[in-house]
Image 1 (cartoon, rainbow, N blue to C red):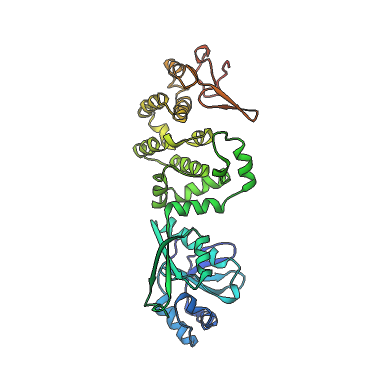
Image 2 (image 1 turned 90 degrees about the horizontal axis):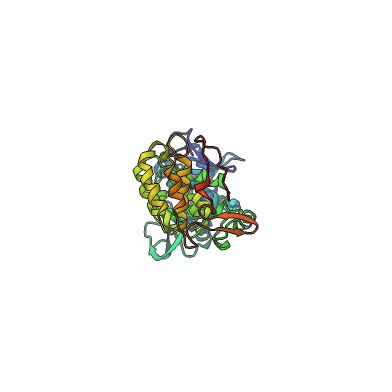
Amino acid sequence: MHGISHDENISVETDRIILRPWRESDAEALFKYASDPDVGPRAGWPPHKSVEESLEIIRTIFRNDHTWAIELKQTGEAIGCMGYYLYGESNITIYWNQGICSESLRLMIDYCFQEQHFEVLWCDCFVDNPASERVMHKCGFRDTGAFNLCSHLYLGDDRLVKIMRLDGSAYIETKLFALQDKAYADFQSKLLPTVKRETVIGVRTPDLRKMAKQICKTPAAQEFLHSLPHIYFDENQLHALILSEEKDFDRCMEELEQFLPYIDNWATCDQLSPRCLNKHMQELLPFIRKWMRSKHTYTKRFGIGMLMRYFLDEAFRPEYLEWVASIKSRHGSLPQRLQSNGMLHCLISSNIAWRKIRITKPSRKPLRVSV
């Protein structure tokens, strides 16, 4: 996504629309719709009376770095207005009920969280304008239970506005549901015996990876990482992928220590692979030892995974086999393997006879083990 500024060449867009700065040449298009008495009052401003008035509005109110025209690509015409501080959405009769308002608002929300790094967005709409309220709910805004009168709006002294809020965690949940594939969720849940079906949204891994890269450096992501426990399996997957993007070792260890106790399935455990760890192997080793001694199944599994990932080559030492062999679980001295839907599901190490492994030369190729 490109940042929006007053440079006429910079914009953000979807397949149907472009959000861009207003131009004086948009005055006639603005008047065409803003003069409609059914449009302006819904959003709190009076109908425009002339093209000259619309031009003056563009010059004095719309020409800033947070108010944009919604341009329909098909016609190249400005058909609405979107911005940080505007109340309601663009109400344009000919384009109602086509999803353009929702599409524009989502685009602006992405920009605010991903580019401007806002932590919270607030919005409001007149209580007698349910269409605006539906758009805001659809885009993730949630009722605060608060109402207000806005005297600076047209007819605002006599009309209540409902106040809504969108924080980083709610923004991320909304985006996950926008990527939902229910058929994939049905398939995926069959592979996750420890996860309830109703907690699986069904977001495919490439989409999760893309989303993690987009938001990993934002305040919204930081809020999300600290909103534990998560409700949905897909949130845990996204959490793992965001941590995998972390480059600072100390911060990564702090976040891992917070997240590991909440992992409740093998997929999230194995998805978690922070890039920064391979540059801090000696600092990592004490953490691995501690994780392997944990009473939490998936913390143990993660510790074993990190040991096998980073310490089977030149850094290998025979005592690492003893570390694994000494692990105890609630099932006995060695972890048990579970059979689920015909698939071998290893909670920790699948009852591997580690002491019998013969290693002639350290290798990162898959180990052959006796089971």
